[in-house]
Length: 126
Image (cartoon, rainbow, N blue to C red):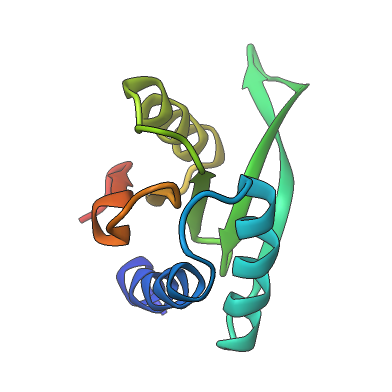
């Protein structure tokens, strides 16, 4: 599967979780339930993945944690906040660059319409 095919399944799973739980819960709740939902839909998922930073040909463990990575291709950055800020986009974009991934989804579950809460962030995706 390519990133867009994975993204389609992921979005369906996000809708399922949101429609079942609704807004207003802690990010950690959505993360655990979403991991379960993704796995139930046959996707390979890793969560709380440590991401080292490569600088000057050295790796530094600086405790960046990717919320969820799906099929080793798509990064999910989950939020449950009043509003998405520019720094959230920049954070996900940096994770994409550091991990050499092409697609990330920034998901804010604390919204009245989950369609408005899902944002694509790309890194050299064609």
